[in-house]
Amino acid sequence: MARIKYSGLIESIRGSIGGTTFQGNKYGFTAKAKGQGVDPLGGSDPPPPPPLYLVKAVSGWRELTAAQRIAWNSWASTYPQYTKHNPTAQLSGYNVFSKIGVYRYMVEESYLVNPAFELYAVDTLVFGVTLGAGVLTLTIESTLDSNEWYLLIFLSFKFPKSRSFIGTIPKFISYAGNYTGTLHLTSNYLKVYGQLPEVGDSLAMSVVPFGQGNGQFAAKQSFIVEVTAA
Image (cartoon, rainbow, N blue to C red; front, top):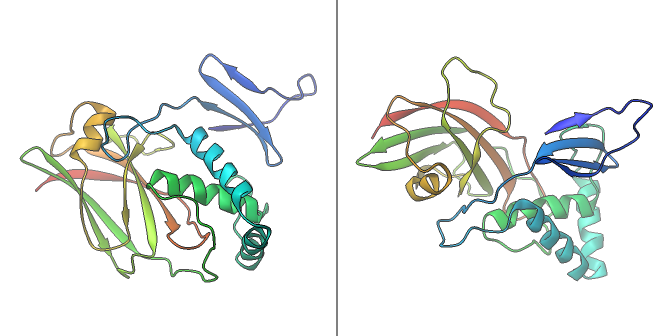
């Protein structure tokens, strides 16, 4: 996604042109490629694409009681969260609820009615990807093992070893909690890319942590992992 600064001749563009969607909100204007929905959980049908998740989250906000909305606004003012494109723009309770709602739909959870009024300690995590007997596995080493965070897992296909910029190349594959363990990725990875990587291949990986019971989210972490033999 790219942020746009318009000239004096053009004030704004909205809509889709040739696979690119132009959007605008109070935080500025952006252009991004139209995404395709993928099955994050190995079901027979692909899930709704992220825009529909946002629609569901917005609908969830309307279903909250006045007291529940006040609680979310209070949470957002007590524990400020900011936009990734403007670190000075604080998110409202509605913004936090909607963002967390989208993430929660990605992990098969409904929207969160009442956020816990606490902040979770940020974990230190180490990831690895192994392949053995046709099984692709993600290994997770957690310092806290608290399982207070959901981890959205994004992976690329074979990534050039000479390349360092990751951007939005990795695609959503699965999710996990912040605990030491393993996660089988074979089915989901094949649904997205059609074939598995080989031992020795490099993959671009991104992880997005967010709180399981509050409105907290952490910055996306992106790095390169090498597929090792199981």
